[in-house]
Image (cartoon, rainbow, N blue to C red; front, side, top):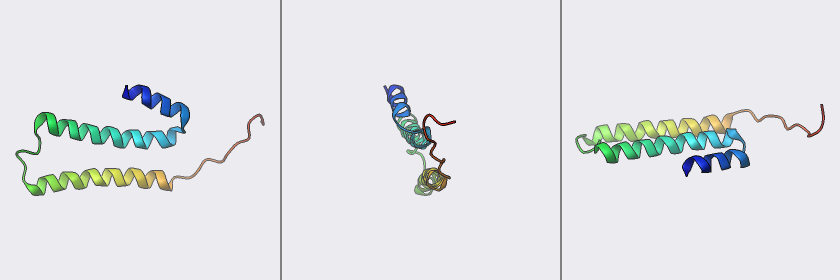
Length: 81
């Protein structure tokens, strides 16, 4: 179901918009699922948990900054050579 939604988004929007959103969603869901499945945070202290959250925020921020500061592609007119 998620893959079908991804393909619909790629058909509707530019891949430069969809790819960063997909990357962040995939990373978020992977971290959440591994924490639930393996009870990853139950044996860690607060410092380790805060460190992991800061790492995730860094990845999220970097993706947003890269997407926001990329150069826009020039628009081309249809039907011209």
